[in-house]
Length: 163
Image (cartoon, rainbow, N blue to C red; front, side):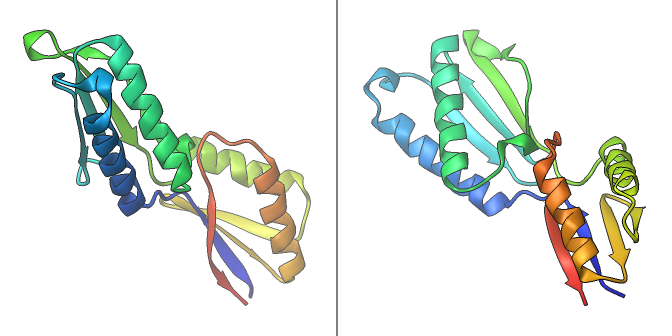
């Protein structure tokens, strides 16, 4: 029986590349000379930390990072930007979390949308993904097109297509 999985994943290697490009751009910018601006990626915790001296520099770093992520085809819906906090020695720190997996509320919403479409397919939530099965591949393709047209709070990928 044909099926596919709906997942939400972010390519951490591309995020790492974007962070490195942003770091190099900071080093070459005149307005960042002699500033203590730092950007790091923690792959285990899936967090990007930006530390700098003031809000203007924080905005510039964040805009540069987002620009580099978009260039590398990383969907920014998968990022959760937290508010700035004061760090040591008058520095400002901001965390950007990388969200992966389809959360339960979004998964239920996806299943409801698929059922409302009244196609001959079944959708089942499996941990952090949704599996859709059906007899006809055309029905599965219609589900994929419907989900691409809807604006969901997370980036979706359609993987493990089985015929």
